[in-house]
Length: 460
Image 1 (cartoon, rainbow, N blue to C red):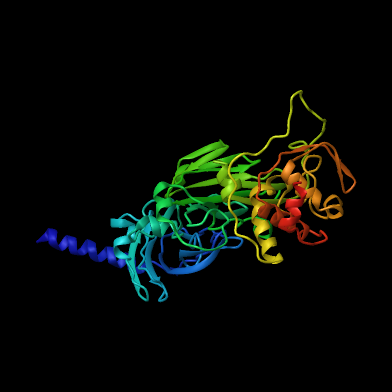
Image 2: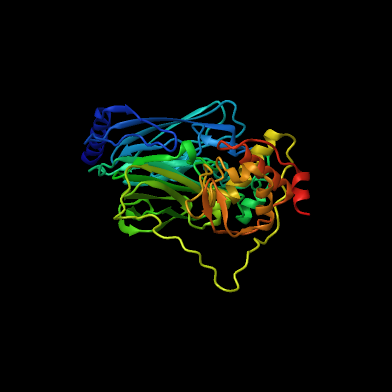
């Protein structure tokens, strides 16, 4: 009898303590932003409300995809709580959804990570609770059958459980999640693309991207920081299949919280992020410039989309990084112009100048951007600018010739001499016409349109 009464008392006291916890609504943020650091020194009851949404979005220019998502973004909203918090989770499924959904949070200790308690039909809301027992950065994802399909369509995100002692303050925090996508059409094939189950089973993605789409963090959407600031990236990998080799070109990670846990590695160049896993990386930005985030399984970055930019402003630091100090011609005996081999990709045919420009942008991003840069500015003394280019504006046929035959020897662009080598690119006539038209109509160039006939005639 005494033991029974004692159990009742313990249960009552536990419920009383839970009832006394302060209640707060979670601050949720869309990628790449992160909620503010938690400053309270005590646990709280945190109310989290999220919605599953099925919507058409753009995976790359001219290509649409039906994403399944949490809160309408891929990845879903970033969740930030504290170790010891008691979470009341509300999952609603939008009435327009065609599928039921649920959520498996890897931060949950309990069956299915919450999935068994959150299976939700369209137009319904499920509620369950859990206690955040373990600090770390955890993936969450939909776990409704077929699980792989729900994840492959974009249903994943990150939940951070801050340790009781809090996290060291930094200047900037951002949210980056990699995912692999499987479409019926090949990379860049225009139109609304459907999910391809067989490609997913074979682990042959058409797109490998950060934050749900090609170019999600480039140009005016690039992450920003100032020289001297310390940046913390919360990095996840929704998968469903591929392991990420996460790297920031031109930086060394001062700290890596290995697999999102509490163990710390230092001075790391590239860190592995498993499918369904995470990592936290921190680094100080000592010099200005554009720092490129990539999956260092490098064809994924430059040919499938796993690339983003951190744009850092500030004064140069020549003692740390000088920039180019000399440029001399080096042509060993036997050097030849190389031909980029492989089969060409069949492209959708442009029906108008505007379509030709749009399709050309995709070709440029896949084949030209690494050298000539996203804004066409080129790289001084190495790759000539395509922006406001007197060389191309005076004779657009020179661009066609360079693509088809390669280019070797000195040329003068905007008054500066370049003496580098460009390999021939085995682009189709359609892709060549599209990309040259895109260049002519970008970055202050004179405009115009290159046709298939123009390209064919140049080949004779």
